Amino acid sequence: MDLEAVRTFVAVVEAGQFQKAAADLSVTQQAVSKRIAALERDLGVRLFTRVPRGAEPTIDGQAFLPHARELLRVAERAVASVRTGHRPLRVDVIASRVAPSGLMRGFHHAHPEIDLDVVMLFDVDTAIAAIRSGTVDATFRAVAAPGRPLPEDIESVRVLDEPLQLLTGPAHALAGARSVTLAQLAGHRIWMPGIVPGTEWAAYYDDLVAEFGLTIEATGPNFGSDALLDTIADTPALATFMSEHTRLVWPAGHGLRRIPVTGPTPVYPHSLLWHRDNRHPALATLRGHLASAAAGHDAAGTWRPDWVLPR
Image (cartoon, rainbow, N blue to C red; front, side, top):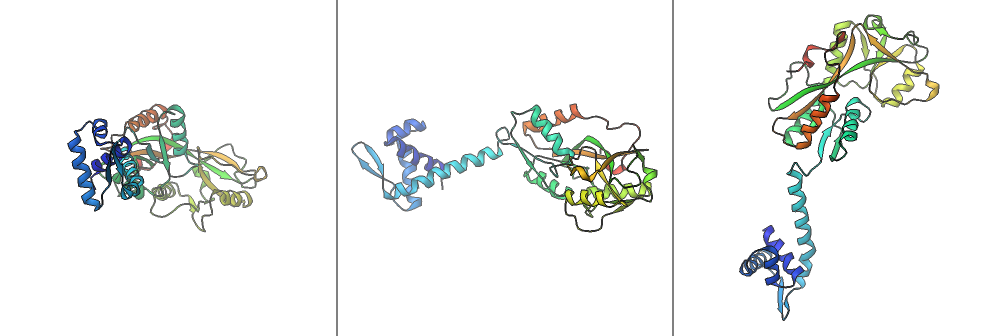
């Protein structure tokens, strides 16, 4: 169906005359007549009847009018969805309590004039597929996984190296420590049921285990952070890793401890990924904001696996 003909139909209804509708649309009256005739042929009905004052919609025209207006509204939304200067910037932050979510809150505070859509996708493959399809403009990830480089059309820049902390209950053997070294963690059970094989964070912790001889257990169902905190608080034999910027709230009686890890400090490397052909103007603003806020990418005494270094 010709949208210009639909637009002309609505203009004639609103103007009440072919001549006035032509003036409103900046076309000739003959062009208006041709468009209406073509639309009537497509629909197989008459849309207007002539009256002394001009033209009035027939019963069929009255029935078609609300749908015609909705067609024009849908068309406007469709055009706006691909005009990058007019649609929100859509960014994947993985989860609501983790560092990327905090980075985007900071960006929104600094640039409240930019419309944002924040989404949460599960793994790097899903996120990259969304970037390539245009479903999202950017995602925060640990770049990739060993042996799985980013596609050539995906750009990345590291924006935050986030230190890991040890989270223990009050009765854990390390609960009273101001800091712990990776060497001190050897032999202690670190429970992380949220690690999913095949994800980029699973690859990161696999490398951490291999490098420092740690024991990380991912057994049992993952009932979420609240259940994890309950278990850590009640089980002296278990501890878990938490990233420094992960927001946690627990009951006062839990007595949980967040303990810095040193010697070296393991950091989780967050990178921003986007499609090289994405021209959304707010994407450049986001990258500039993250670059100005970034710190400690190559600080001495930190550890990260080689595969998460920038390409």
